[in-house]
Length: 564
Image 1 (tube, helix red, strand yellow):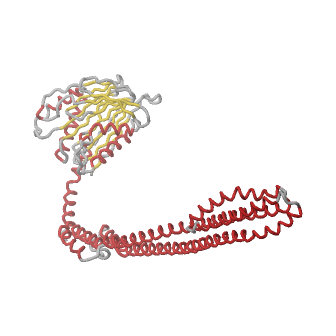
Image 2 (image 1 turned 135 degrees about the vertical axis):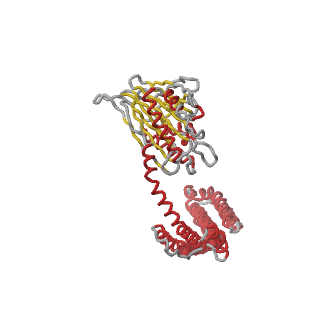
Image 3 (image 1 turned 180 degrees about the horizontal axis):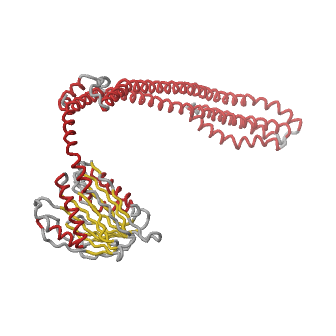
């Protein structure tokens, strides 16, 4: 089945069924509506419960104040009778204290009664009754100093005549207390009712949530999980080679559409199987030649004491790259490195790269100068088509003098890195220098080594490339790469560039060369987000110290070519 045809009938598949998205939308809408409704019910109930509890508390506070006020009335009446019998001034202390405290308690009671909703006229009636009793008490108190003991005893009886005034005061207090008690009981019953309603709303909310969760889990299991499990089992069978495995159809429309896509993929794999087998047979016939050419492009691995080389090559397509690098031992104390990038990749580029590799290595052994080696090889390219060209970096290191000499045929700028934060200053006007802040807190500096001549091609046959010299002692390294690293582009077309390489060097540091190369490649891949169209080769050259045991130290570490 053609995948394009599958896309054409997929809308019809969706149109005739209630899709999983719509089902989940309905369930979610019901759940949200239920939760919003129960949430609103809970909020209203909590608000009413708080109001009822507050009203109940205010009624209780008013009753407590009324009780305190009644106690002061009783103290005043008791003090009056004691003073009438004894004419002893200390007997009037309760009466006097009541006179001082009753007004404040009355104002407090009036405010609290008003807050409960009870008529404040009841408090006014209580206060009026107390004022009437006070006027009576004032008359009786005036009689006490002028009467003797027998007269005072005789006057106690007439004071009983004012008891009806005090009884009237008690009646007003009882009436107020009854009203407050009714309000308190009413709010208590309301509080109980609100608590019951709150429990009911919470139970309803939990029930809605439980039903929604159970229903949603059941829907997902029947519509998605179970069908996907069966589909995954069938897909694994197809991946293991069983192209006749049955692709199950079931579940939500989205899952059925996915099953149809898997079915179409299986059909395409079956249809292309024969073509693939024929291509594999053809590749098998040419495989030995390709493998031999690939091995011939590998670095020779020659080394010199005092120099450490680490490199890696990642081919863009297949196993034949247009990039290469090689190491040459010129003498026991002189070391050569060649890094080249032939335009394109594949057999033609690989053959040209192999020719340049051996030609440049031979030239370094004879003329012993990077610029002279490039000049000599360029004169041998008369039989090469004009469209073939390469960028090449050639350098030598003399471990006795600690001098690096390089010549660049249009190759991307290499970086000469020094483990010192001091800017070394350019040794020729085209060199750009700068400082690095490494992640371990130390500093470093760098010099960009620009080309010293044009690209290596038949068109510039006979050109003379110049040599540039730099100090290369322990603590100094050189990082070189092909343009496949710098020209990795993101989705917006922005290149990775030298600045990104420098940022990666700051993050990875200079101590571990393989780790540094891996970090640069990984950063370029993350930046690109696209299929790599060009080979990527990186080489790290470092000056190392001689050891006391052997007198020398040095190595060449070669990474196996990688392909995508």
